[in-house]
Each structure stands twice: as structure tokens, then as C-alpha cells.
Length: 386
Ligand SMILES: Cc1cc2nc3c(=O)[nH]c(=O)nc-3n(C[C@H](O)[C@H](O)[C@H](O)COP(=O)(O)OP(=O)(O)OC[C@H]3O[C@@H](n4cnc5c(N)ncnc54)[C@H](O)[C@@H]3O)c2cc1C
Image 1 (spheres, rainbow, N blue to C red):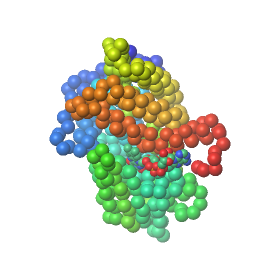
Image 2: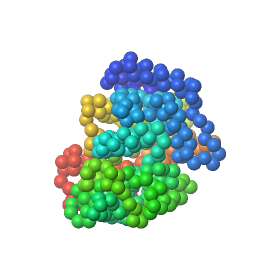
Image 3: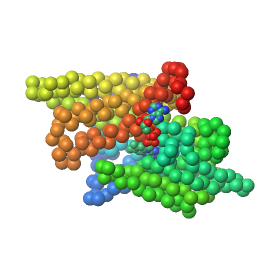
Image 4: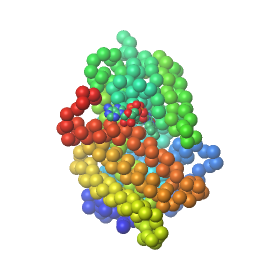
């Protein structure tokens, strides 16, 4: 077993160059340990401190061009940093890569230059306003409407739901309909919504496990300038597809190396307590190891494709499905093998187990990923629904 996942990916880049980057990062980490989370400090506030610290060292947005505040390196460099963090069980790099990609691909030059450096530094915190009470999987059914006036300005009215951490955010990447009729995929547009704009109300929702990740976002005749639209009218759909395809990648988030740590613990336990493990548990551990290795092999291929310039595209649904399967089985098995972690200090595995249940929902449900794979990758006929 290698120390870090991307050791096995080095043959895609210049090994000496990547090794230098890893060494520099390890040196920096030794001088800048993970800050302690204060009592009662909300998770996103703690993660924001971590974000700013990483950015101060130049470790955020490595693959974003220099003129927009990044380092102009490749996706592999960013992946190597995520991997180093995951392998230490540290929180990953801030989850802004997919929003940055949306701005890079669809934003105007002025928007990229103004918004990206502040997004990367953490000066501005962003959230994602796509889902609505009547539009989750069927995003095209969204009802939030942006009416364009004769002066070109928009008046936006509607409601968003499940907007993660909007209460801690400055901007929202918002989708709204700019035509009431017509093909839904051509009538949705994207906007940069400052959350302090008059008419915006953010209402946090308390989840059953006590978390307050989710918010409702109410938009009551919110005025936006034409320059706050991202891309052309109707670009909202391709922008959303780009955003979610980059949201579905296990490598970017350091998840793979984090899973790797737990896989190693499971393997050790299986070797040391082979005789005493309950029936069936050994083969469950085996399945976890296989899922993990399939995911690593798949990530290898996807990394090679990215470095060759291929966009994330519908293949990212395979990434998401494999990641969800590996993660859910891993934490389910880990709780059986280490039941003490249910009640242990911090209950880290239990917390991860609970959150893994959401993996088959956020960023598009597993059923929707299968639909995308069936239609867009395998070319199977649809059932008449989108
Ligand atoms: C942790 C978490 C964070 C999130 N953060 C955000 C965020 O920041 N911003 C944001 O905009 N959204 C966010 N979401 C919302 C998420 O994108 C939606 O929950 C998801 O797209 C599913 O939509 P829904 O909840 O409305 O379920 P529904 O679309 O109502 O689906 C209900 C069930 O029906 C199934 N189903 C629906 N349509 C089909 C079909 N055509 N074929 C087969 N099965 C189908 C689904 O798979 C699901 O099992 C988040 C969700 C979670 C869990």
C-alpha cells in the first residue's frame, strides 16, 4: 500500500515536479498545523479559517490560471494537495473547485477577474442555489423567475431549498428561469446573487441529526443587474451540468485518501482478528477493499482524461456512483468492525457514516446518475421522462 493515493498516479505527470510540490506542502504543513476547532464554532466557520490558512500558503486553486488568483498548474497538482490532506485525516481543500470551473467556463472576463481571486482567498464565501421545493432531480422544473425589465435589469422572485451553508455565505450561484415558456433547458439562466441584496431572506433549517447545513432562500423581487448574469440567457442549464459534473469527483475532495486510511485499519483488523470476526464480516471487508481499488483505478483513468483536456462530462456520473457505493459500504462495515466508534470520543466514524447516507442524494441522486449513464453514455432509450 502506498502512502498516498496519487503516488500511484505519478506516471501521468512529471514525478519530480509533483514530488517537489508534495515536499513543499509537507514542510508548510509542519509549520502550519490544522487549527483547533473552538467550542461551539460552527463547522463552516472553522473550515473557513482553514481555507484562509491554506490560501495564505498558496495551496488553493492550484489549477486556476494565475491572472485569476490561482497558480496556473494542473488538476494533478491540486489533486496531490487534496491527497496529502486526506492522508492525514485533515479537512480537504475548500470545496469551491466546481464553482470556480463554472465561472471560468461561463463567466465574462470582468466576472472572472473580479470574483475568482476573492473566491479562492475566502474573502467571499459562495453557496449554490439550484434546488427548489418542486425541483431537485428534475431541475428543469424550477419555478424561480427572473423577469427582465426594459432597462435590462432583472427582478427575481422564488424560493430555493437545501442551499448548503447559505447563512455563512456572501454570494450564491443562482439558477432562475428567464423564460416562462419554451424548452426548459434553454430558458434557465445563471446569476451571481449577493446575499445581502434587498429582498433576499436566508432561513437555516435544522436537520434531524442536529446539523444546520441546509437553508431555505426566499427571493422577493430581488433586483439584479444584467452584468450579474453569468453567460448568455439560457446558459444556466449547461452551466449547471458543468458545475455538478465537477462536484462529483472523489479525487478533488481528498475523499480517496481518507477512505484509504480507513481501508488500511479494516485490513489490519481483518488480519489480526481473522478468527474472531463474525461470519460474513471478513467478506464485507473484502468487498470494501475491492470497491476502493475499483475507485482508485477509475480515478486514475479520469485523471489521465482530465490532463488530456477532456471536460468532466456525463462520465462524472460513474465517478459519483462508484464513490457513493464505496463510501456507504465502507462506513457501514467500519461501524460493524469498530462498534466502539459509535460511542467513542468524537464518534468520528459514526459522524462520517451518517453523512455518507447523503452521498446518494447530494449532487444528484444515484437513480439520476444511473439515468444519465443509461441515456448519455450507453445510448439506451428513455422512458419518456427527462
Ligand atoms: C447534503 C446535501 C447537500 C445539498 N446541498 C445543496 C446545495 O448546496 N444547493 C442545492 O441547490 N441543492 C443542494 N442539495 C439538494 C440536492 O441536489 C437534491 O436533494 C437532489 O438533487 C435530489 O432532489 P430532491 O431532494 O428534490 O429529491 P427528488 O428529486 O424529489 O427525488 C426523490 C426520489 O425520487 C427519485 N427520482 C426522482 N426523479 C427520478 C427519475 N426521473 N428516475 C428515477 N428516480 C427518480 C430520486 O432518485 C429520489 O430517490 C443538497 C442535498 C444534500 C443531501
